[in-house]
Image (spheres, one colour):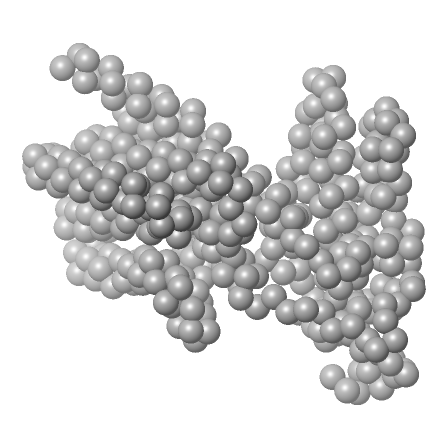
Amino acid sequence: MLGNLLATAVEYTVQALELFLVVYLLYRGLWKRHAGVLVYLLSLLAVDEVVRRYFFHRYGLNSLAYAYSYWLTDVLLALEAFGLICIFFRRACVPQLWRVLRLSLIVVFILVAAISYLSLSHHKDNLLHSFIYEFEQNLFFTCVLLNTLLYIMLHQMGSADEQLALLVCGMGIQFAGPTAGLALVHLTVGGQLAYLLLHHIAPLCTLGMLLIWTYAVRRFTTVQEPTYRASGHRGTVPALAGAGLHGD
Amino acid sequence: MSHMFRLDMIMAILSVILGPALLMFYFLDTCKRILRREFGHEFFHSVVNANRLEFPFVRKALEEFNAPVDYERFRMQLKCDFLALTYLLKNAGNAKGRLSKEERFLTWYFNAVVLKLIITHWLRLSERAAVLRLTSILEYFANVLGERVDTIRFGDMTASDYLMSL
């Protein structure tokens, strides 16, 4: 009962944060700089609010149609995230390096997309058995690896783009948790505990990613210099004097 | 077929091991990046003086005097500083009366590092890094608080003037 309540609370928080970030990016005119992030967020919203909700209400939670829609949209989102990581690579690289990396990333992306399509169409009759867990686990693992490569590259280059580093960290959290959960389901051949773990970990990781992205987007766009008083900095600030006085 | 099966298993085991490790890694790195935020001024001194916080002395003892870690004492001092600072962050010049998202995130991090400190103490490993990490989190909190208090223009206002102006 409490678990369900918490899961619902996390789900609504995730949706509220997605909506907030989309509105924030549009309202502050940041959508050009964060076009990839915006598209990914819009897709998350569309999948959660439109596609899955439609199938849920029309066919019910235990229907085959809902299960198909759930897993296929999950694969689409993972592929989109893969594309987003490529966009992050573009932002991290100097033009010379990007020219070298671009082709490899495009080839890897096409390969992953093609393998995904072939695997899914090959197993379309038994999609909902253990195959989908194994498939998603491999797809997520590829995303985590690519993301980690990007992180290492940023570290090696001594990149000063803190916002990008935080966006990359968020993406890492989004995929690292579910990868382990899916692998556990695969290893335990659908163990109940593994299912339960995956059911709770995936939304929590999405929540973690959204919190980090919100922080990254807001911190590096709304940083304001503190206004100092003409008399300069106070010697000893009576911090407790502020306690209880409300107002920033 | 058995090769494929073995490869699947290897991938799954790798994912189970690397997944949580990477999850923890990204979480810790995010916390470190938040802590790395630069403030326009070292605001924490004034907050430390006004509230008699002890974390700078703990850090000084470890960094400058290379003192051994007095586990019980340091843990108590840092915990008290943490409670004082989180209380002030919630209530000092804060219209919402609650911690912001990143502050809450860092309180989780603080508790995670305290857990690490307890484990390292229990395993008789060096606790130095964990204690220093705790002091840097507290310094961040003190800086945020100092910056916030500094931006409030009290001027010659009395408490009632200030409240009336809200």
